[in-house]
Image (cartoon, rainbow, N blue to C red):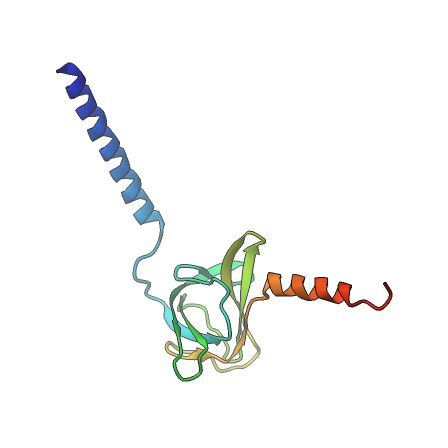
Length: 151
């Protein structure tokens, strides 16, 4: 009988600790509704960029990716991002998908231009660059070495 009570208490303790971790992870994930400026960008490929990934300028986080969908008219990936409304982005800003490391992890880097007019909520970034595909680059390198006439 005492063994059953001990097992019940330990099970309840495990559930309480799991609940604490769940609440902690929800609060630190910062996945709530953002109140920034919503802008979009169209890419030919997004290479694993997903909802919740960072939007950065010069390595500083200024927003997050809120949605990714396929534009049915152009067949491009449309990325929706929510950025800090205090940051004024010129209309000739470029969006580039970068990689955090060789093991993966993507972010969207914004490179502000020099125009004097600024993007507003609902606008689209015109200049985009899709990420480099490491497998394709390695394949081109390997096949170029095999076809080298100097061999």
